[in-house]
Length: 568
Image 1 (tube, rainbow, N blue to C red):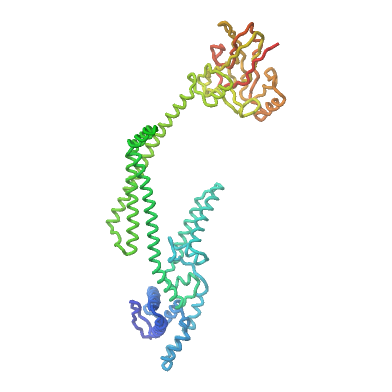
Image 2: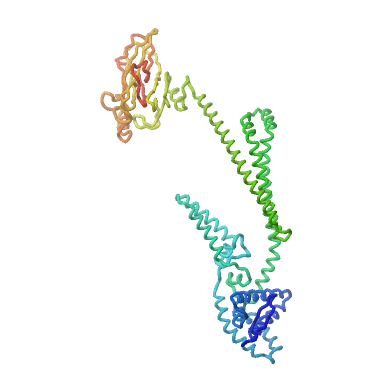
């Protein structure tokens, strides 16, 4: 049977065995004598006693009604041994005052401490990973990595961000999905934040740093924390001021931009006046600004509301944390939350309306520009692309008819495989091409031959090369039908439709065109064009039924390389 004693330790009551009390009393008295020698260190002994009380609370929470000597031994092993407190000096003082009356309890303590020393050796075996709460930015994970592996917290934070950006860029480069990488970094950080313990007291901080848990080290750590706390307030206030100034600068910049936007919208008359003064045309811009006045006004006002709400809540939270003001009440929080939600909803709706109006005007302006561009490209009632117009002007062609044609020239399937050469080309998916283009030339009396390279779609009828000789109001017509060889075939260099002016090099190119399949071109000739005296000749390609006497059902046609030569 043991005698229990009730003690008050740091304002907490504990039931403790008598022998455990003797050991604890000797330990705490020694701590106070040691720290009592140094001015201002009494609070270190108080902190150590408070830590002992916390450990006793943990023991009670485990269902122990009374603190035993084994419990005290365990606590001493965690806090630190008495020999670490400059034992030579303190033992001499103790021997001078208590040598004559040394009790059996003291000798018993020495025996117990020799066994507790083994536990301390285990605690001193190395570092433990903790979240560093003194240098944390979010949860202290990266600061804890810096303490455990070495380096500064800033280096680890920069390395963490750069590693993520580098791996993300590599994933994009190799066309990999970066979502798995994001989840790895996010859940890895969250997992460490949940699983890793926090370094909340000096003992944890020492273990995090890999230092021995001794009363001297605990005392030094308490001193550092107190000094850091004194300096931390100034540093923290400086950081707060810097952050607030940065936020204020950003906020003022954005507000300035918004104000300039409002100035451009709501003072359009002034802008117009200056535009007229400097001879600028802003009629279109003025119309747009007038249309977006209300959405832009609501967007700006809601942005101001959101900014003020966020800044006020941040400032109030900082002031509350520093003890300068009371925390927000429940009703106040609800009011600010509702104001923030209203601001966000208004901002989203007004921005959506603003974007819708801008898209409508953009579509309107694009349609107007397209129509204006089309009018600029209309020649004799037909739309000419830039390529068509340049080709017709350069080659001297005149478009007589061009109904139901999507274009008048093309490139990419020239007979020798040269993809850059442009040629006459008409297309209609409805197979109702009405196309006639020609050029004219003054000729003398004689016999002439018209030669051209042409082709048309498969099974087509009604595509002709023609020549018309005019003299004194009379016309004499000559026609030659274009073979329907489609876009494959090499008639250009074989048979009756071979091109007789082809050089050997052009022959090789024609053979190799379209991987040896050719493009379906054929040489079309009109021979024996007899002219009795000087006259005008018009020639070209046509599908006009009034000229050919045959209805055209071709899907497309192509023609190029027209030459008019004199026959002997």
